[in-house]
Length: 415
Ligand SMILES: Cc1cc2nc3c(=O)[nH]c(=O)nc-3n(C[C@H](O)[C@H](O)[C@H](O)COP(=O)(O)OP(=O)(O)OC[C@H]3O[C@@H](n4cnc5c(N)ncnc54)[C@H](O)[C@@H]3O)c2cc1C
Image (cartoon, rainbow, N blue to C red; front, side):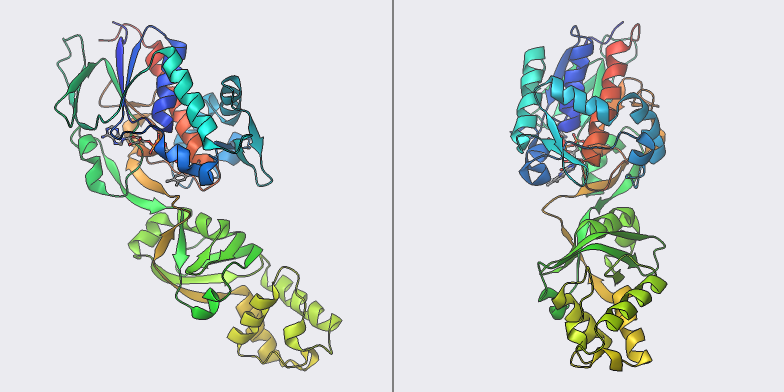
């Protein structure tokens, strides 16, 4: 028997895309999209500061994969079949032209997430996807293999829906209890923890510099092996910017175990120790008669330089050429490894993703079907997949949804 009726739970990016692609590939299948809230695509609408960072302009899958702290080897198979170019082409064919920003992030040319949301909604409506809002699914029940329908989906208002196949597209949740509906099906959940956050640091001197940024800082957490570099922004609560967000993504689980309290070492320029020494030495040679505070160091804003000297315990009024070896070393130390105590985290522009979710070992990457439950599929952020900021999370949602849809649209002769 073919799949005649499919229930998709969750009208977010991956749920909508799955619904549309199933209908595009096999219009005969009845597709019902259940959404617990009164609004579709809520996260997508506020994403990317209201502009929706649809994907990242990275056409090499091997490079693309390096942007996912979790789910890399699983996505390798997925991206082979649906990757960035497919996303760009699909949206263009549906009236959403994308443009690439300098850092590779891709947005609709209209700079409005509404364009993306409306395109998905329009396409789904046109293809006859049935949307039921305010339908919060509470249980998913596998039915007898002999019956016509394989699944019963129960909603909070006492209504239920029957289907041949069910797609879990409910997004990520920071609390484990919110996965109960899935756990009841004996599906393993990897403990969810937040990813993509900024660091809270209570240092009033740092806070005074809020709004100031450097273009290529390097960050190292004490006890965590990796370092990450990129732009860094000083905020009125600590530090933010791509270097911090990357660190929070790769260190998401580690930082959770540390309860978001640890020491972070900031190198204000992404230079090796030798390079930094030469850099400072050259700045001094060019300005031997200048007061230290008036030295120009490319990439270090003046107020930050004053802070670095202050933290090094050196007087800014000192003449550069009179700097002692000890003072020189103290400045180098503070340029390369300025320590701060992290005392918690803050969401970045309310943007965060969940690290953790459905254990990928439970899923066949060729079909996105839960191995122990034929006819039950999963896509998007509910999976233990997450990317750094920059459009990678949406790309994972589009790609996994595309595979779900191909599997469902093409399956034949299955009860
Ligand atoms: C503020 C913000 C900005 C972001 N910006 C970007 C960005 O620019 N680029 C990027 O790549 N990523 C971004 N992300 C991450 C990205 O939005 C998500 O990874 C993506 O939306 C995941 O899509 P999804 O369909 O899996 O989940 P969601 O978009 O979260 O959709 C899940 C849907 O399921 C519904 N649902 C949940 N439980 C049930 C239930 N029991 N019954 C019925 N319905 C249910 C929810 O209400 C929701 O509508 C951002 C996230 C946030 C929070």
